[in-house]
Image (cartoon, rainbow, N blue to C red; front, side, top):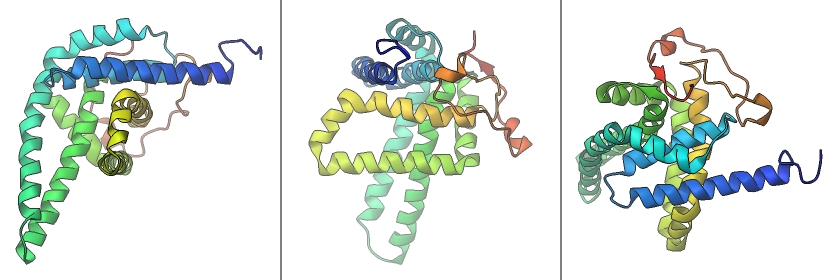
Length: 237
């Protein structure tokens, strides 16, 4: 392998770090109005999936193309989930301030509901980036995938909790995360999501396997999972 070849692992690593920084920057800028977070997250995952699948990608062009095409539906989904998340947050705070056996039970129940909400939120925008379905079906699919792939969901949830705790303990970590962490986690999470999505759509294979971060495809162990989602793949042209 030539030292200055683009296939050199060092250059590949530098390129990947650059991609993560660019994704973080574009996500942050396009999320500033707050209500656009859904469209920004969908666009970020759309680009991350293409990079991981070793597809030819123009980050800026592809990001804003995806942002525009998914803007309406992703924004509707985000605006649906936002008040639900706020209510769950208030419920968690309320029961955490109470005492007694009933408060303990309700607090545990609230934590369980919050966990289900968070994993559904984590899945819904990657699902929106890959599959083309109505809002209701996209939300349902994200929930069912999160439940049926519970081990993957636990890993993603644990990562989110760990990062949130780190940012709480060290506020400076929050600023670093905004600058670089969003793109980094999007890329890492995208690998996990593609593993899940390929159980429902075997066509989600890399264009160049030797340059991809994806492992060889695994056949679904449960055929019922394959019937959960049969949407139109938007990544494959």
